Length: 256
Image (cartoon, rainbow, N blue to C red; front, side, top):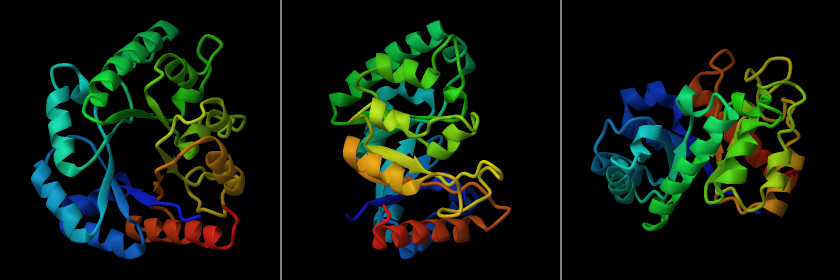
């Protein structure tokens, strides 16, 4: 099928801080074609774009602090990402006051929709990236569902490994079916019910053939973004190399 694989650069954040240009070249050599940045804009957009272009990669997203999409700041965020050629603004977490009740989540959904409408004017998109808390019951519903049922133009960047940290009964497959055509990118992260993130693709408990099959049926994924979070097993660079090798092997064998 030919999936597009990107790397969530948080996985190699220390290496990236030490050597932006060299780390990006190593990532490209591993077989990644896209990279997703994260955090505050500490470099100029021109510098990031030059390093990405030099490595032969493309920017496929930015995990962006919420305040960057506030009405007072959103135009600066749009300008910065336009220089990068990036259309995907993904919020990876929110202040407590935006998530501590059903009422807060409903208000948050309204704020997301405002940002989505503004970004759409410039051909850009806003997404939300979950952790485990969004899959813990709140007033009878999962917060993850509060958001996506009430902010219809916000896309779902499901992190299946993060979702499963909420508990072993978490259904990491249901959102893919429940919210069809709501994902542009996803985070693929191995997870074991016994060892957490200390595992590898093909050795973990996520049913990858099922997950990719559901994605192919119900979503139109532009990029499968790999994230690796365990330095106990491998160094970050070795871990992300093994991750893409494992997924590409599954793909070649027709398992995903």
